[in-house]
Length: 446
Image (tube, rainbow, N blue to C red):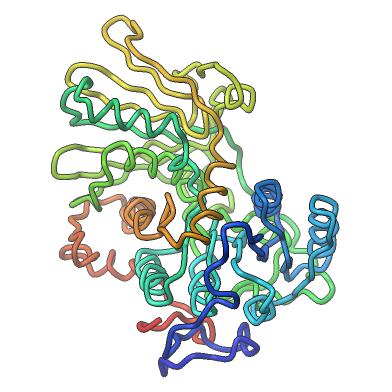
């Protein structure tokens, strides 16, 4: 494939290829009081939630884009009511990227489209807020960094914990040395769940481009369950709940430990244990260990116990702590002197000693707005955002490393962080980069 830039009008019908030069933003650097004009690409529930937050923080949703005509129309109505002005609509990403009325994009597409759409937006001179996990695989994540740097774009990942005041305070407490040495970190994603069954395939909605929705993923017939969120259960589109939710805790744990880079080894146990024989490919039970130079980080995932719960909305908005034992998304740092337990998206943190005696604590608040404000400010200042793609690359890699260790047979694998390759495992290295359909392929040179 030639590494030449495509016309964005041809996008979704041709390859995702690189640009020969740097694209310029339509308005250059915005003034401090100028309103940022954002296009929402992918009008599902999460995308709309973030878009409404952007409006409340002073941005304008200038355009909404979705392949599904019904969702597109309802999103346009919703954004119009929220901001007093109905946004334009677009059926293809190409239409959005060609628009001079768009400064930035908010990408709320299924996971397998996060990387390709982000790269194309950077090439088009648009800044990017992309939902987590930002990349479908390790190689793709590296290409996203290259694109953001080459085209001098702001690329913020939607891992809001990096903008939370209580998490920054936790980091300062850890740096004080009061916990002592921290050889062990435990990260949890122990959530309830049930069996997954595809059921009837149904028929694609009128005018819906299923091939474009699939993108780089292998061709398969349309299925209403996959389109309706079931894509989370298949490797072609996602990394399971580790990628969907666990990335938040993993990234927060990396942040707390000082963003020390990728591990030198990974091992995994588990699989489809609680719901054997259903239609899901991804694990409902995973226990993963990451070996770093100075500590071990474990990650435990479940998709079955009814009594496990994420931090409630009430706790996220008030001065309350979760019942940690049955909090599904906590992080535990086992220092040599004290133990710290941290909640994500609010929930705060507590430091305890023997007998559960609390020696220090801080309540937390949901950091969504703070994260969005940081993105909007960085568009104007051109400073790198709190969850810059370069920082998130290592955190997202943990998702891929853990899943690869499972997919090759629950093995322990040595990994070279500098080369971003496994040591002596051709089978594992084949999963560092996906095999893409040619017309949606990201080239080596973005």
